[in-house]
Image (cartoon, rainbow, N blue to C red):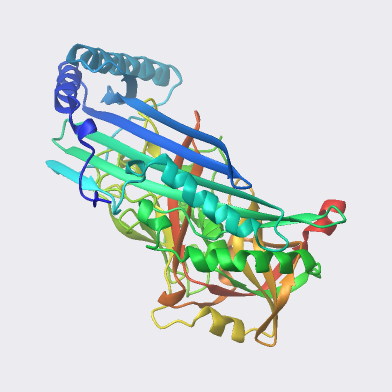
Length: 509
């Protein structure tokens, strides 16, 4: 396969991108816009799904178009189109200005004096950025993709105790052109993939359960499935044994336990209890209808004790292979990395340009994103990650320091309240820890805590050798709803005295 990293798809760059942008921005300026930006996108999303080594479904869709966003009279205006002519782009810009004027009248009628102003961002001139991958998955024939998924499925089906296997691969190529009235012009291409296999066992009694691969979705290409970045052979070899042990495992006794949480589970706890909670629009109450606000309110910046002194969390739009990694966001802001929690204290938030200016925090840290050309950019999550301890212990050493506890592996279900304060998480597999050693799997386990109590109970953080970049393709936010991909890196970590529930008992109440 040819190496494709570093090159933007020529079929995208061949579009009249500058011609459309120049027409739209010129029209917005002529109509008195204080700011205008033009964004043209093409997002190709595909999936391949197998059930018991047979293809059960495929999809391949492309979302294309462009949008103009303006600030006019202190109000937002937005419009989008698909006609790739200069006249059409100018008309869309006119529609965006008309929408801003209407919004300004509605805001004034409501008695509000709030004006939209954007934090300054230097002009970056013309820039091209491509995510870090070797082989574009869309350059690989579909037959080769299904053949690999079929071979993996057949391998699992041949193992004793495996009754069914689901296999899937999702792939996305996202092309984006951006230009604004400040002079920034960016062309970007991002590629991401998510392969996954689930093995199911069914007992004679009718009881059933499943285990799933732990390989996270990543900003990589086809090479991720063929040897770079994940040991698929080892994971597939171990899956049937994990499943058999899970089927025979005893139920957990509820109570307080010490937890060693693997990165394959902890990433999701970070996402829900830290990632969403440190979105500043949510903390200010601007985002409330979709999944609520945040307990980490702005007045607590610099003082809120989020967790123990071992807790150091960064927001990062630059992490290699991160799902939220970009060169520039959808407001022309260059990607950055910054602290959200330092030594256990809340010290930062995720910002876009409007929120940065509104709160006096200076420059945006590049968290504006729209998931399609028909949607307006909103403040979205960066790669939010817990940093490992430079000389921290291995996972085995963390387990060795526990007398009575549970080792948690893999994500499954979660629940968190509308202020990101109280939560409950389950997982793929749970292992009893007895006197520093693993002593078999447990069933029906969930851990429950408040966000600050949980992170405050963290007494050890694993070293760099335990660090894994997890994540998801489907983080939801805003209304109308938008979906974004985001990664969360973390090491293994030890938490003392966490409440454990028996989910079967809870369901029966």
